[in-house]
Structures are given as C-alpha cells and as structure tokens.
Picture 1 (cartoon, chains in turn red, orange):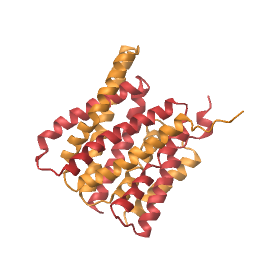
Picture 2 (picture 1 turned 135 degrees about the vertical axis):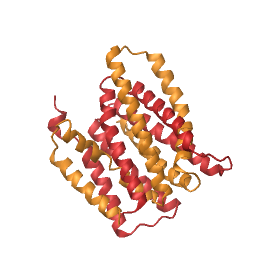
Picture 3 (picture 1 turned 90 degrees about the horizontal axis):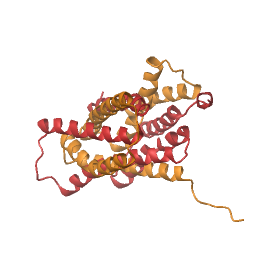
Length: 145
Length: 148
C-alpha cells in the first residue's frame, strides 16, 4: 500500500469519528458554540505540534499563503454549511450536495496543477463522490417524526 | 405576477461550501510542496483565527441559555471533535506531502461518512437504509480503484 494512501485512510477514519462526536456535541450546545470549542481544540493541538514542528522562516510566500488559506477556507466552509442547514435546507439534501466538493478539487487539480489520473483513478473518484452522496442520504422513514 | 428567480439561501450557502472546501484541497496540495504537515497545521490554525474571533463574538452576543451539565458535555465532545479533526488534518497534509495527488486524496478522504455510518451501525445500533448500504459498498470499491 502507498504511504500516502495510509495517511489518507487515517484522515478518513478520524474525520469519520468526528461525525459522531460532533453530533453528540450539537445535541447539547449550539452549532456556533460547538464550532468555537472545535477551534480551541485546534489551537491546543497546534500548541502541542509546535514542540515537534520545525518552522523555518524562509518559507516561500505562496506556500505560507496557501497554508493560511487552507485554515480560512476549511473553517469558512464549515460555517457556511451550518448556514445552509439553518437557512431551511433539508439535512439530507444539503449534506449530499456539499459532498460534491471533491469534484471541484479534482477539476482544479487537473486544470491548475496539471495532475493526470489513470482511468481506474478517474472511475474511483467518481465512485467515491457517488458513495459520499449516498452515505449522506437519509432514508425517508428516518426523517418522519 | 412575476415569479422570483432567486436561488434559495440554503442552496447558495451549499454552493459556497462546495467552492470553499473544493479550493481547500487544492491549496493544501500547493502548500504541501513547501512545508511539512506540522507547520501546515500551525499555519492552518492561524488562518482559522479570524473566523474563530467572529464566531466567538457571535456566541458572546447571543449568550444562549444552556443547562450547565449539558454545556459541559457539549464542550467536551466539541473539543474532542477538534482534536480528532486536527489529527485528521495532519494525516491529510501528510498524505499530500508523501506524494498523494490532490485529485485522489480529496475523494478518498471525502469518504469519511462511511466511518460515521459504520460507527452508528455498531455503537448506536442505527439501521442502515438500502441507499446507505449501496453507498458503503461503493466506498470500499472507490478506495480500491483510487489506490491503483
């Protein structure tokens, strides 16, 4: 197995667990307070990471900008997804719809970074996005009170 | 009467989310060419800070009344979500640093609902619908295809 795939699967597992812990949190407090404490945890983790990280101050400006933008984009995305749900969107539709985000990453990576996919990887990307949408769909019987 | 053609707010917010998260995968790949996963996580948190200030101000302004015990439980789970999410970020960045393509790593990691669904099935004893079973099967197939 490729090393990068092992790390990608680790991210998948950890983010998958957060699907449950986030639900447990928002059952008790508002989504905003939950998000705020999520951010505090990120700060705590980053403080711990400082011990092992070796930042060198000669980083290329584009790299720094992209790293900073990563935090802003991901955080804002979480916030706008809450807004979509609070604006009257059905959870089953909103979550399924936003599961399409990797499609944009694939397009941007191919167009802007010149990445090339094999036919198996292309079918895998399409299958993954389809799977993410199906997994996010709620059964009609579950949504009925 | 003229019919309004305005997009519903939830749809607009959803599209904005797709754009933001879709672009996140791209900038993470560009960043991974020049920094290790740890420094990336540090800068990521700095990038998150302005939003954190805004949300903190909103929470302070609303000051919603919550039961103290429930609030403590909610904060605990939110904090744990942040720690797990942050370590997940480190793994995501590391996947990029180790040569994973953004166009492959993003779809693989986007399969995280399969873990949530499996956990709900095992620990919360939730029953899966037919659609979710199909999704779960496709998720395993996707990982196999993407790892090729």
